[in-house]
Image (cartoon, rainbow, N blue to C red; front, side):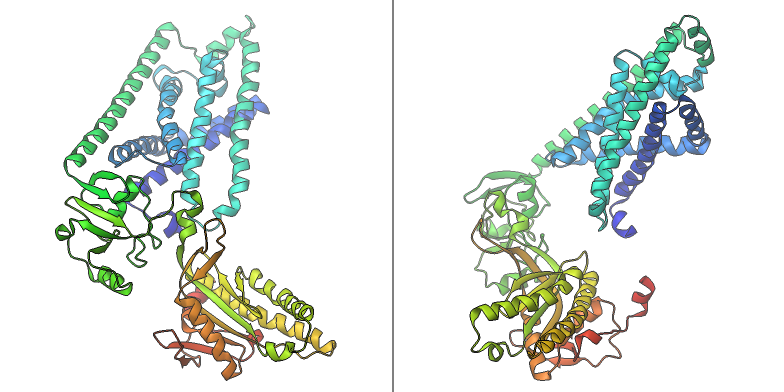
Length: 562
């Protein structure tokens, strides 16, 4: 899990770490403000407790280093971007991040700076009455919402890489709404209380003396510092914009012109692959494998400029030969044009959302299970169609919950059998789910057969093939009427393994690929080799006579992870 959360460049990891520090500080700061809704004494005591760390030497270094680092890295990232095109969520995060300094600088100046330089007792109640009831209270309320929203978006972008975050999102949305609401309620409650106190001529002088209320000269000096801070921020922002514009100008001077047949003409930076150029300029370009050179769906015919391209690599050559591609055909994910070219996209996605990338196909290494009922034709000969349907539905009602309970789904029903797939975050999880489903199906079949025998009917026998490999999941069919299904050699291999169970008189054949992915120690298992029709290489698999009794030894690594 840690490797997923902290992968990326050093700059990315520093941005995440500094963002977490700032988000944690903001969380406790907002809780502190919210306590004004309950009791002002609690609010002041909580602030004192917070400042034990935040105003210590180590706390100050950590907090302000995180602040400067996070802001600096954000500006560097903006300056280094190749394009300002981004998703709405990314754009919102960037805009909110740029708005934060406009109010944060004033906040820091009138709190920490005023306390350290002029001895102002910047208690929470002082800050609130300082802003009340003028426009500053609304500006700081906006700052609260901007900081919190910016942090929540960043946190979501970070944690969405994990497998557990999706289930927690509804709960986290509740927390995300509750925290700023609590803070704003505390701000308003304490603001009204302090305004009533300062409206009393007898009480106001004592409070001002306790706070060491700044005089006009001090306020003037504080405003000068705030203006200087804002000037520095605007200067850095202008430098960021100038750097971005300068880099873009240099890229245009070092650019290459690409013309798409039946498409636009673009000027893009040298050094990028053609697929990257297409995506950078928002040009639809199919690439089901994600640009890894395996699926060939990004291939293009180079109508002009093919003689100026670098020769294809072995990987690209192998992929092109596999599809018997004609001359002048290249993979857009592999070529890096340095000279003008005219290209024709062989597979061009439609512009409608109903043919977006995810619907065209997504590749993954998953386990699939092929199941078939034995002797179905002989069993149902002479029966009415209604009786056949009734038997099949009872059979599927008995065993399909085993697939669903293990985390799988039935991809398609095939008369007296079905094909199931186990979508998971990785191959190991998928393989273990497939094994659990096979064992559970065996146990469910025994219970179903007891019912049949009690009714005077013959028990049902089945065969199952469980295999793991690369699959493509996508919508196959006419646009708007295309069910989601899976295709690939793995499906064929699973089907062939299921057919082999008939001759062996076993319920299940598990391929070596499934066993290894699940962390099973295969050294002591009696694996058999099968030459399967339509599968180029022999497949090693484990015969299991009774799926319900399936028990497999794990490797030492897998046992320790459990």
